[in-house]
Image: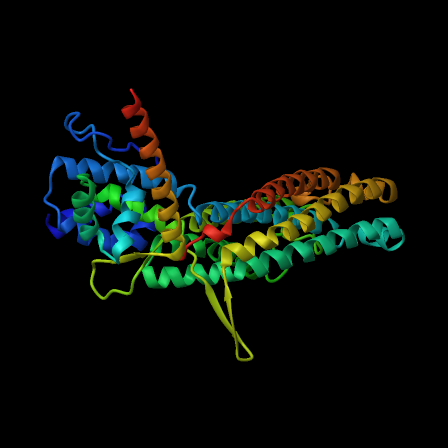
Length: 113
Length: 322
């Protein structure tokens, strides 16, 4: 997965506080249930203010499906919903836990000064 | 954006990717207004998809299968050159009178059986999967490439049959019988011309088959092949099976290489006159024919060994069906 740029301060200027790790954003978006592409883009925007482009979203979906972290659901429409696999849920939980520890440690350092 | 615009953008992606995600990606694009930002995002992502598709789970084993096919074509050409030199020559009697000389020939035969079995067992499911993909996806570009070996064989056989009919069944335009012909008709000059055309067509068929089948493997998709045997259903992953058989094909090719090299050594000691006589194709000496065979078998063995070695490093557990 790509390196992460975690949002620490929302008031540092436009474009500098966005969280940009498309595969992790997709995993997080699917954590509360299956979604198709457009619903993921809107959900991710609501979640962290990052609006993924359609190419970026499907680049992430391709990688995640190859890694077995998400899987497509049966669909008769052209819009294809995806859901997390058991492995995807485990990976998401581990990554978010790492991010939480990282964020807490970083904030603690900031507050110590 | 309009469906036609979305379809054009989807076409920026590799065909393999389009086959899997094209329809749903087009549906997503239709929900977006066309803008420079959307266009650049899709264009950059398509470039990334092209770069990663060359290393994707299917491309690597498909490319290795293509290399193995190249090696097989070289080995078949090398075997044909040697067989044509030995057939109906003084080498046959010499081999019968010397067990080591004969053993080298048997080694070539055993190697060819091992390699042939591995190529056929691995190749049939791949060919079956490709034909299914050609029919379902209507891929004529893959069809004509896959059909080239049959076309090449037809051209060679057609040419030989034509000459045979034209000469009343006396001359089959064999490149190995240009110098010797019984009866001595047609004249040697005509035998040279027709035999050279046969040799050229054989070269064309082998080289063309190697190139076109490797291209077809690169372009195709490989879904699982389902077999029902005595009520038991078997699911075969064609590329995985081919990768498993590559070391066997390589072993057979290396055995042929070693046996052919030793055969030449035995021939020079036990049939020296024939070894330096004009029994090779187009009147070349048996020695040059043997040397060409050794070189071709050597290249074939090196190519197949490289493909087999790389196939062992592939992680098929990340492969996904499309």
